[in-house]
Length: 125
Length: 131
Image (cartoon, rainbow over all chains, first blue to last red; front, side, top):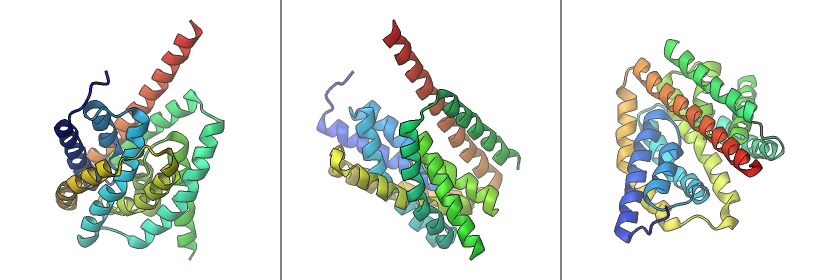
C-alpha cells in the first residue's frame, strides 16, 4: 500500500491537489478538503490523519484566494461571513467535544440523510 | 443588531454541526445562508469561503502540537490553487443560479456518501474485532 513516493511524484500530487481544490472551493464555497484528502492519500502516500491535518492548513490559503476573488466580484457579504465564521470557531470546539462523548452511527446516518434532503431542497427551490 | 445576534447564533450552531459530524464548514454554512438569510447561491457560497478561514485557522492552530503538517507541502498546494480559485470564482459568478445549486447539491450528496462510508468502515472494523 504505502509505496514510496518520488520527489517529482510528490510535487505533481501536491500541485494536482491544489489545482483541484482551488476550482472546487471557489466554485462551490467549500474548503476543498473533499478533494485534497483523497488526492494526498491516493497519490502522495499520506495517511488519512496526516492528510486531514495538512488539508485543513491548506484550506486557509485555498479559501483565502476564493474569498478574495469572489470579494472582488462583489459576491462576499463580509459582515455575515465574520458573524458566521468567528462564532463558528466556538461552535466547532463545542462540536468536537460532543463528538468525543457521543459517537452514534444512527446519528451520522441521520445527518447524511438530512444532507441529501437539503441537496434536493436546494435543487427544487 | 437583532439580525447580527441571529447570524452569530447560526454560526455557533453551524460550527457545532461541523464539529460533531467532522464535515467542513462549507457544507453547513451555505445551506444556512441560503435558507435562513435568503442569500442567492453565489452570495452564500462566496460568503461561506470567507467564513471557513477562521475555522480552518483554529483547527490548524489546535493541531500544531501533533506536528503532522508539512508546511512546504501546504505552501505548494496553496500556490497551485491560486489560478484555479480565480477560474472557479469567475465560473460561479457567471453560472446560472440553478446550475450552481445543482453542482453544490452534488457536493452535499458526495459528503453524505463519505459519511455513510465512514460508518460502514467503523462497523466492519467492529465486526472484525468481535470475530
